[in-house]
Structure formats: C-alpha cells, structure tokens
Length: 313
Image (tube, rainbow, N blue to C red; front, side, top):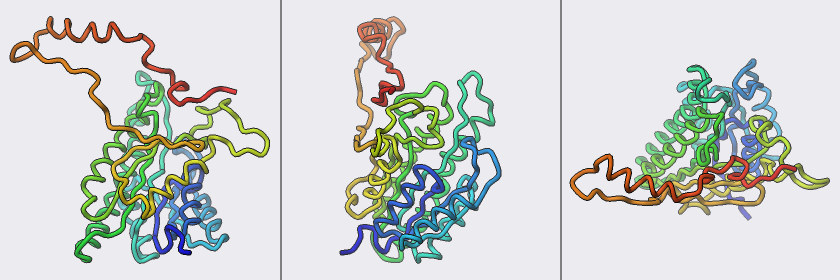
C-alpha cells in the first residue's frame, strides 16, 4: 500500500530542532523525500555561530530509517539563499510538492522598550523568510502548471501563533510577524488555487527551545506519557495538510496541540452602527459605541494562560 506522500518532494524550514524536526520526520514517515533546512544558530534569538550540524543530523536520522533526505543550511530570510533552497529540492527530487515554513527567532521586549533591530530581525526571519520560500515555490508551481496545461500538486503549510490571535504583551514583533503570516497565507491561497496549490497556516502549541520559558511549569507529563506539548502532537496535522487528502482545505488557520485541532473562523462583525445622516458626528458615535463597551465585562481580554487553555502544575 502506497504511503500518503510517496513520490513527493518536500522542504521543511527550521527543521533542525523542535517543531521543524518533528514535521520533517513525519513527512518522511509518510513517504516524502525531504530537504531539511536549518541555519543552525544555537540561540533562540538568532545569536551564535551558524552550524550545519542540526540540519545534517535530522537528514541523517531520516536516511537511517530508510527515507530520503538532504540538508540545506542556508538562511531563508536571505532572498538568494531561499532561492537556492527551492532549487536544491527541484534538482534533487525533480520537483517540489510540499513547502513547510517553520523557521523563526524570538527577541522579546515590551513595545516601549523594543529596539528597531529587535523589531526588524524578528519580522525579517519570520515574515520575510515565509515570503522568500513561498515566492520561489509559487513560481515553480506556476511554471509547471503552464507546462502541464492544468493544475499541479502543491502544498504550503505556514507557521503562525496564538500570539497573533490572543495577543502577547512582550512580543509585539513576534505577534505582528505571525499575523502577517496569516495574511500572506490567505493571499497565497487565493492566488495559487487555480494552479492546484493549497496554502494553510497552523498555530501550534509546543514545548520547544523557543517556548521553554512560556510553558515552564505547565502540566509536565507523567511517567511513560508523551508530553501534551510535545511537537509530535503537531506534526500529524502538517502531514495531513501536505497530503492529497487535504485537497479541499485551503486558506485555513488551525490551532493544534496535544491531540486537539481547532479550525479558526474568519473574523466576524460583533456589532454594527449606522449614522442617522450622511456621516457620523462625534456625539452620535459616543452615544452608540460607548454604551456597547460599557455593557461588556471589563475582563473580556483574557490572560494568555486562559486563552491557551493551560493550567500550571
């Protein structure tokens, strides 16, 4: 019996550790040939000497189980290196079918304390990194579709965060980047649908190097149990979204963790007010909008832990 991703070529960025590693291993387990990308800097803030070891170790791990994998150690935030990553996949496997964007860094600071470089670096790696790889993959699929005279196979899975959905006071750069990734995903989904390509985004909850302080003290696993926040809970959804089974899933945002997947609806209008005349006056807006908020609970903005549905141990 053929595996769901057999014969398909994939790229997973940020795949040397954590979520990316789990996702690369899952795609390989499902039959895909994988280009394992990781720039290899040890610091979660993007600091330290770049190393080929993380990407090469994961690629070797895939090959040791009978799969096909090569390592790429370039920086996806660099436009040319992202081009080389996509070209490597096409050259090695004949085509690219799956792109999983996961690479990122953190440089946390309150908005009033954040430096320009702390803002720029996080937007650069997360948002531009997602754009760079998507740009070159999309061009590849468009050309293939033109040559074939019809749709081809293409899957994009992007990594957003609940920091975008629920807010994160000390991460304005990260929250903005992750919100931008959702916008990039929905735009890409609309643009590439006619070529047979889908684009979806996930908001994963996982205990990784990037979130070790966020989830410190939250429900540690018991003896012999898989951590509810293990990246291995997220990887199966990525494998599904990358598969032919998800052909009708496009432009979606999903929260995933510990045996749960939640499909997030597009924003809805909560209330609507119409001007009595051609346009509003200040007084009319005050009369309409202020009572609306006065009647709502003051604590409607939930704490991050409540939004995440987590409990401290």
